[in-house]
Image (cartoon, rainbow, N blue to C red):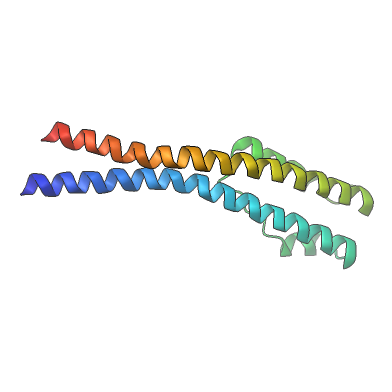
Length: 135
C-alpha cells in the first residue's frame, strides 16, 4: 500500500515538473503579446497625447522575465533607444520593434507547441520509469 502511494506521488510530481516547464513556454508567449501591446501604447501616447517618456513608460507594462536572453536584449535595446530622436524616428523604431515582436511571437508559439508537449510527456515518462525501478 505504501509503495502504491509512493509511486502515485512520484507520478504526480513528475507530471507537475513537466507542466511547469511547459508553463515557461506559455509565459514567454504571453509576455511577448504584452510587449506588443505596450509598444502600441507607447506609440499612441507619444504620437497623439504628446506625453513625456517617463509618463509613457509608466503606463506601459514592460515585463519580460520569461524571455530568452536574445529576446530580452532586443527589448532592452528598444527601451534604451526611446527618447533619443524625434517623434517620426521613434515611430519608425516602434514599428520595427513591433515587427520583431511579431517574429519573436511566431517562434515562441511554435516552441511552446512543440516543446511544451514534450516537457509534459517527458515528465510523465521519467516519473513512470522511476516508479517502475522502485517496484
